[in-house]
Image 1 (cartoon, one colour):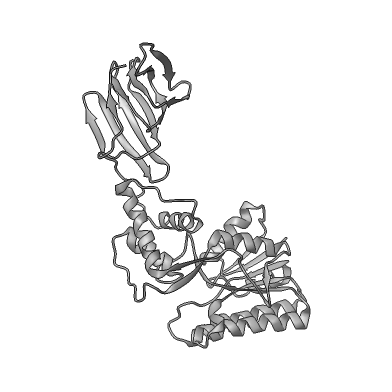
Image 2 (image 1 turned 180 degrees about the horizontal axis):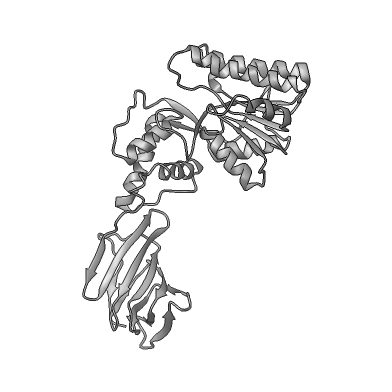
Length: 369
């Protein structure tokens, strides 16, 4: 299948082409504003499907709306008719097409051209009135408020919120791609006269800003937000794509002494925390027990001995662990326990606890094994 993609270098176009290639579609005609206009003749003659994504969002003057969103669409359809090519056409319109403003009128005019093309040629047309899209490779101050907020917050720049209670309807780029690939296979999601992306999310503008700010703060408070919430998960992935390239990494606070170090890695309110413990050769750490707090130890480097004793017993239980064989050891409640570095190199242990450490309620009682 030969697929024509107009607006190939735009936000949706770049994502779509990458996913088409992932799915094995390699015969893709990429047409952009910078392409030789004569290429459109060749592409419209040979293509088997058209993703018409090209459009004008923020022109220098209002006349460019109609020229870009109506004029180019008209040219595209004329060429398809010229070569008697009845390939299906998918066009990205906007929910703004329902409004009487220059942008909305231009998008509505483009829609009407597509519907007329269907009546004249019987070619399948898929008109998608898209809400606010967000995701990687979008442009701040151009595509979406999400991109602007992510870009600015990641760089400690101010953001502007005129109405924090403004309700936004958002749609994630991966959900758009999944729907577009379904349309490519002739299975679009249709609602009345238009096609839709079935998965959307609603959020108030002020809440959106606070959520994205929390992503930045998570580097210092080590929090991991609830990724069971689909919008949070998608927004966090988008935020990471806007990190400055010299700020992909961040430091953790290492609590160091002569024995080694202990470093918290991440904290979650509902699933506890993860830390990294480093012990020097011959060092013993632990020798405490818990009522309710429980842990999992995973030695990833070095050799260690984990020892247990039920606090009302004299029997000592031992587990020898090594980075050569990754093995999780559960730390049950009611057992005092310790971990000893019995090797010649540093012992590195990843430790998970079912609750974040609270100095007011540590649930930790020191007793020698």
